[in-house]
Image (cartoon, helix red, strand yellow):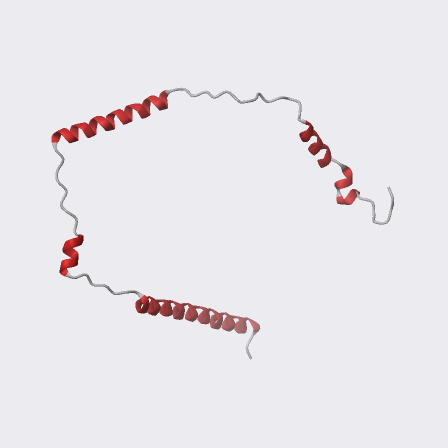
Length: 126
């Protein structure tokens, strides 16, 4: 006679086995579909020669010096902008008094009639 524990373990093992079997079948199905529906294109020698990039030419010394000067100028501008102190005053100074809209909202939030436990039962008049 099997105990409930052994029955539970057997059901668990069968369930887990079915789940992993389904995952493996799905993986194989996707692999087959990818192999079937992907276009296989093998480039010929003439296609590879057309698409190859030309070899880069080494920059001349003057171009390299200009490039370094531009980079140095950009770095100097970035550092100068970073060292500047930026103070933007607020558009409107904060006031201590709330606006009428804020006051109405605050009063509505603390209105005891809105609380469910404070409401009168249905059918009673105020």
